Length: 367
Image 1: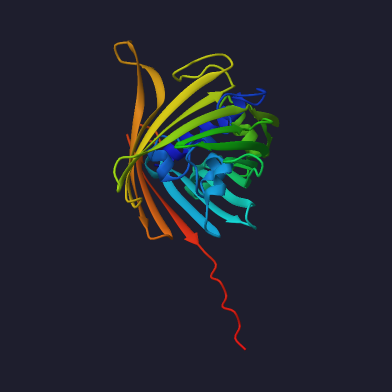
Image 2 (image 1 turned 45 degrees about the vertical axis):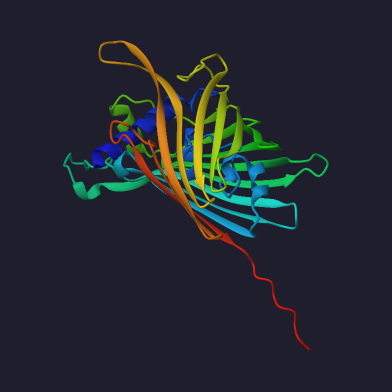
């Protein structure tokens, strides 16, 4: 377990060093592409047009305008690599007046308790395990969201995000970043359409490194380059979404949704490859009973891979999930989906909670 943590950390440093002089490396800030909320993950992330709760601060801030309660809290936790890495999310959405909607969201993806063996051998050449320390490598994002209904255009909602990125690898390396998102939602009859522009101005991460003489010596003796301060740029991406509600009977309903993710950082291993644009689709379906019990499934993450006999095949991953609304205040969602390395565990269990909080009206004072 400790060796795997160390391997993940060394791989992270290698990636940082390789990208030190790259102006716009592929998959920059990729932890922000995983997704949040068990409902959305059960639908294979086809959620841009459906976002209507506190998680809209991540998926599409325009969806915050659907929240009717005064406050809504959303929480999620899951793990990567059989528990080595942890992925946590929390969001608080609230409104001010009739048409001002806000949200504050926090995302953390981190590997903790990584062994630091740089001082394992003392000055006399002896191995001393008491000299091993531990540290964490984490990616953090703070998202501030604002949304409103446009008064002059019926059923058109607009929202924006300001993102602050903080990435660290112990005390050795750290980066600060900032980016902007813009989202739209439009409803036409039973159809919902959406567009989400992420990192519209490009998100800039300024990396700095702080290595003491001992650490620099370790890099030199192991044949590694010492990373230098650099600027990492996350290029924009556009997400287009559409969804439609079907009423089967008085109690049963069906919701179908689809997203197209258009990236601009060059050719990717997705369904439609191009340079600089690539397109990755995802499709989800949700069956509901009395708007209380929900069954979900989705397909996405198309990949082409080489098998042992060197033949090339393509495939998409299937996800599934369930949800339940307990009254008007509490919702519990579960998703079975791969959010980690398939060589460790094919699927992961994801739970998320959503709380609605309404301020009670104070009674009028009596004379």
